[in-house]
Length: 182
Figure (cartoon, one colour):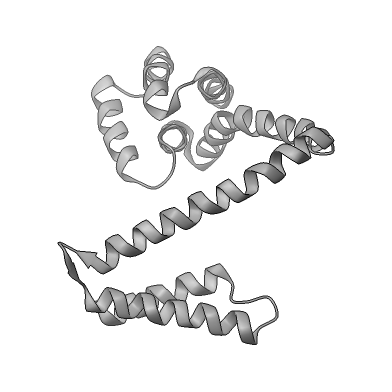
């Protein structure tokens, strides 16, 4: 019976929690306290812990409460129940958007948006680079050197390799250089 209660309780949370994690907390509190799974004080502690751990608060709380109530199987059931509604909605939207993407007006709209998105991403990158290299009004030599090395690697990679350097590889290289320098 606990498995069914976990599934039903967290399915309610997944279906009706709108407004992000903080908007879901009252609904989570209502469900958890109505089933007497944990106390209100314990829930407050778990919300604080869930905020400081990676992942969405709802998923973290569902996994924890499911684990406390019914072990590993309970954790899996509660996690699946809280995630399933969003997964199904996104799946349905993806299916419906697939046909919309074939529409010539949607294609024209997307073609028009592409340059602006590239501009926004480029402006953000330049802003972050300038902020990184110019700290407190003076040039940070370490950061500037790292940025120059990464830009050189990117440029050489584009010239030498057919497809250029993978962004993931560039992130790994930058992490290694950052750890070595700082």
